Length: 445
Picture (cartoon, rainbow, N blue to C red):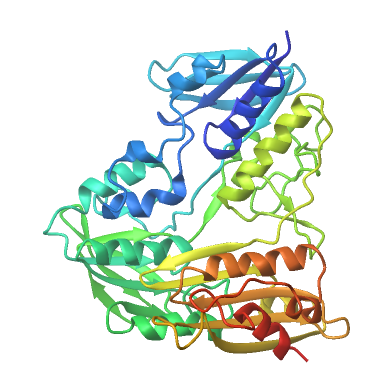
């Protein structure tokens, strides 16, 4: 009986395990997860902390017991500390008993995800400093921030998770401010698009961009102030979200090809440069459809696709994953920001000859109640007018789905002229005669 070992039991790992079992009823599948929870929606953690999602159990896709009912062995509180590829075995530590054992594999899938980057100025002993990545992090933070004595919260890092947690803290009635090293929040977006949101938040959120945190000052085991290169801010609690890095230190000496940040480079079948070792999820790369090189963009959507493709290939069914555009969307209070493909900044770094267009259009007919403005920025190739990137910002939920039109168009290599002539739906409550998607495309020259 062939034995497939999967290291990591969240999105990529359990997606692979589930599909592999559907494809092959005979293979032995063993999953090792160092946490106590598997297969949960990590993207929902900010909403669980705020109470919008009532129970952490609502975030669980399947329990350990449900996987075991499908003949998938799941070993929680077990950490793989070493991979011996020459002998095709992994060293596993039981984190409760301390016992270490070796487990043989025929094929191996590394799906260990990523962990928050913790800067050196964070004191380990501080009881009021949090990072958010795992379900246990969320459970701890949900309990902690219910305390009404926690009034002023400083968030270090103005990226996706940091800005989602701004909404979380406001929902909990906290005074919140964000410190971001770059000169804008949402650093992946172009400045003029990010600024639309930041300028609207000034009265509710302290936004401190272009500041570098130097020190967290403590009293009696708690951080009481954040010191930057420009100012000092009193706090009752601190949340740190300055980025993540792949959980791949334990295979650093294995000889796997990796990016500089430790992401494992895989081919289109999720296989690494070492035969029979595969990787999926936040610890692995994807081919960027426009840049045509491996990139590490941590998204739940990508992790699940990795898992499905890996499962096919683990089962001996040749399947390829073409790649990604880094399509994402984030909700910040009443605002939605969404982007796909290359930003103007990225295109310039890649020396691509581009044009850009920025427009403002209604989400639906102005004479129908509740019309809202959508801000759209398109980046396209100058000569061919092929769309390379899109960013949308506004107060309408339809932004997410309109962004998907652009993601599809880029994937299919469409030009702005072709997008403008798409047969999109129209009725006054939902769109304008020329949809905002097309208004932006028509503005491209």
